[in-house]
Structures are given as C-alpha cells and as structure tokens.
Image (cartoon, rainbow, N blue to C red):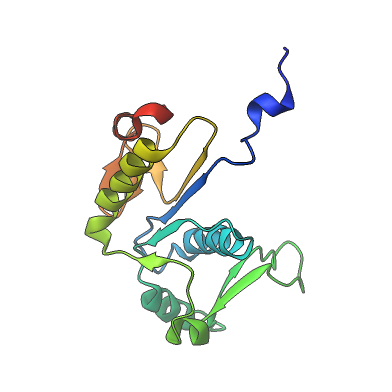
Length: 169
C-alpha cells in the first residue's frame, strides 16, 4: 500500500465546504441529536472553518421538555457523562438564556424545507468544488439502513444522496 500523505491531504490553497444538519424532530427525545449538531457547528465556527449549519428541531420545545424533567434543566449539554462519571462537566453547553438572546451558530429551517435545503447545498457545492477541495457533510438525525436519513418527515436515501452529489459518490 503505497502513496504519500501529500496525496490524501487537501492542498493548502484548497477550499473547505462543511454542511452540518440537525434533522431531528422530536423535542422530548432528540435533545442528544441537537447536542451533537451543536458541538459540530460550534467547533467549526470557533476554529474559523465556518460552514452551513441547518437545524429544524424546535429548540423552544426542547427547553420545554427539559423543564419537565425531575430535576428540571435549562441547559443542553454535549459531552456530559454524569451517570458514568459523576461530577464531570460537559464539554459544551447551550442554555435557555443563550437561546432567548438568539446566540446560535446555525440557521433554523422549517422542517418541511430541510431536505430541499440539503439537496440544494449538495448540488451547488458539487458544481463549485474542485479536485483537492474538502467537502464534509454531517447529518445528525435518525435513520435506517433501507430508508436512509430522516429529515423531518422526509427520507434522504443513499441513492438520492449520490444522485444529488454527482461527483462526490
């Protein structure tokens, strides 16, 4: 197995394209999916990579579900292993206060528009990306092997994904 590391690394002058999507739709059970999405968005934003970050989960309803817990909570945590490692702190938090003051790193999309937004981004990026560019697509949602990834009530199958992404597959 030959090849050099230079052959698999993007060229210094290459472009980076990042799409991170939260396709979860059940606020009472999908907070963990949003936490993963939030961590990807935050990390890419804070490290200067940027990207397109799309969310269709109603965060107000997530905080409503958290307030119904015993004890109630007002923070979405990423990287919190409280049961496994008590007294550990989360790596990243997003509070009701931050949300009420619109401190977010993503764009909210109506759930029924999410699949269209994702496919448009993929098609546009496939057109402008050049050899050596890096394209990362992260889909945080539910899915199955046969139906694909769930984006609200729509499914994005592997076949649709490859058809839309053209050169990437």
